[in-house]
Length: 66
Image 1 (cartoon, helix red, strand yellow):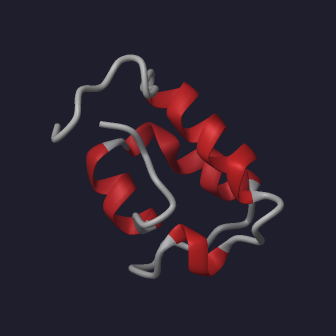
Image 2 (cartoon, one colour):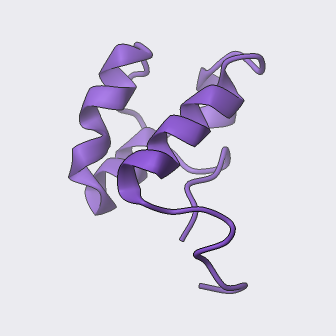
């Protein structure tokens, strides 16, 4: 699964606890609001890249629907 902008930090942390330090470095609060509503649109692509690198996920490693 790829971490996406429509996911919340809280939901992401429930699956990948090792993302906590990345959220902290970007000053993203642990809430149920989506990343796209919490993070500036210019910063969001970098945050998503860093989160997905941390969990070892990318579009290449994932299949549609799962």
